[in-house]
Image (cartoon, rainbow, N blue to C red; front, top):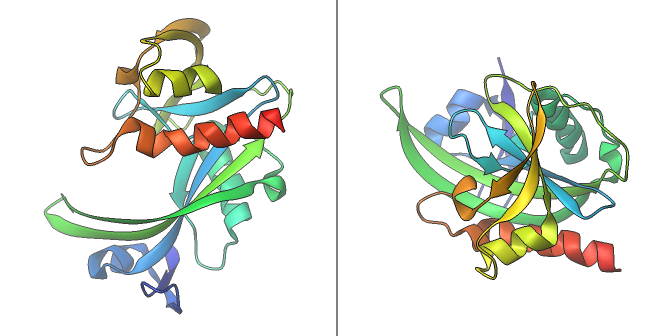
Length: 202
């Protein structure tokens, strides 16, 4: 059974509760949103199995007693199958997230502090393996071109998509990215793309 550390809306610690209880009662908890980029200026998006669209490199709940950096390394390993120097990951943003949804006849009350972390993986060549239940590939995209796309400066560009079977160049458009109905692509991904571009220019 999975336990999560729970907090009030001011981030005062309440205690450890099961994941089901946290979502049933709408208790605040930590999630980790992991982003990888490389020395060539590419940012890595996972390709979601359910939506067939691009999302964070990896993401998930932070377990009870787990540090955010350790959660970063665990989620990267679980979802895309690589080991990274997670202790070097940097906190970029903390986004309070609230959403209620119905799942299997129950109302899920999601109240999360989304901790957004960024890590440069240098120029090392990684061999990705994917959790078939969640992730079916990785998109390696130039951060500057991706930002230009989301800002409507260009309508498409060529990026690399890696799956279990192949690695190929493909045309990328705004339709390839996952976004919630109440979000915009530039709100969801723009600040992290800017962070990658700024880190490479410094």
